Amino acid sequence: MVLRANGLPTGVPLSRAPQNRSMKTVICEAPGKLAVAEQPLPAAGPDDVLIRIKRVGVCGTDLHIFTGNQPYLSYPRVMGHELSGIVESAPAGARVQAGDPVYVMPYLSCGHCVACRAGKTNCCTNIRVLGVHADGGMVEYLAVPQAFVFKADGVTLDQAAMIEFLAIGAHAVARADIAPRQRVLVVGAGPIGMAVVIFAKLRGAQVTVLDGRADRLAVCATALNADHAVSLDTTEAATDAKRLAELTGNEGFDVVFDATGNIKAMERGLDFVAHGGKYVLVSIVSSRISFSDPEFHKRETTLLASRNATPADFETVLDAMRAGKIPTAALNTHTLALGDLPTEFPKLLDPDAGVIKALVAC
Picture 1 (cartoon, helix red, strand yellow):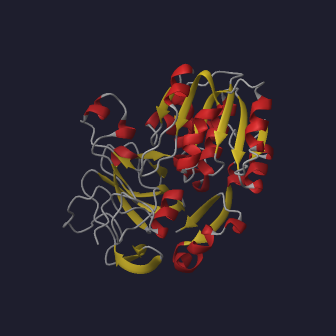
Picture 2 (cartoon, rainbow, N blue to C red; picture 1 turned 90 degrees about the vertical axis):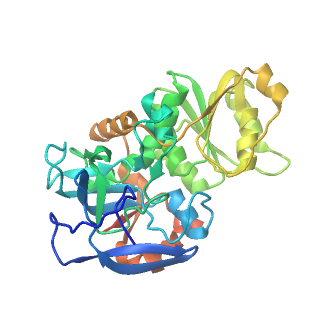
């Protein structure tokens, strides 16, 4: 299996890393099956940075791959796209050098399509995401095109591995162009929803979170300073809807974000948007969603999709981390060893484990 991150042929002996060495690799061979393998070190091309991977954040995408619920993937696959590490070697003139701590922007965009030309590399028409369309970072070494490798000065390697998922939240908040004192509802308090909470609060919004898990609502209220935490009610009583109406004087929220990945939740979310408000779909499902057109029109709702993140969003996160504005210690609840993943990874699916963000130490 070739581990060049850009998916291009290698065929060139690796000359800038330790010779005659193998590396540990964790492969998802099929849904529910992880295996540790020893494989050759990757061959770094002339435009590649060779990285000694140190930390890998476990994302909901990884969990979906493991359970067989990721529609844009073929097996076997090396997962992992939330990456930090140390540069082993870099091309002459690159912005990073051997020994630099770095993070990886895992969206390998083409640079020339209609989206890339408009600066929207996050929705490149030819995008290849590490760990999804191409093998990712659950390895000891990875070669990545230099355009997607950035210095992680001023933060720890643990923090650097959390930049990517936080950038998704920062991008969603930027898409909504949130203003101070706006009333914001975040539906879904997983890591992405929490990232939205963080950056909405940093913009001065009044933030309410809706979720079915009391432990995650508690984190939002205590560690992330959410103004209100409302427990999901799926019964006919719909006490959550009544509480949300009370919090807005029956006016609804200026901006509603969905971060659930649940069709019913995404369709229901429009009910909470104020007249003249915005509805931002951060989550994605491999199906159609629908809602009442009369309600959509009478509110003149602005509907926005939010996909991945841009380099500017990554910088927004990095600046906030350096300023101590992101409680990364509260978010990083679990740490696993790379070699232990076949036995330990399935435990991350247990709600009782209380996982927010798990990091893999390589």
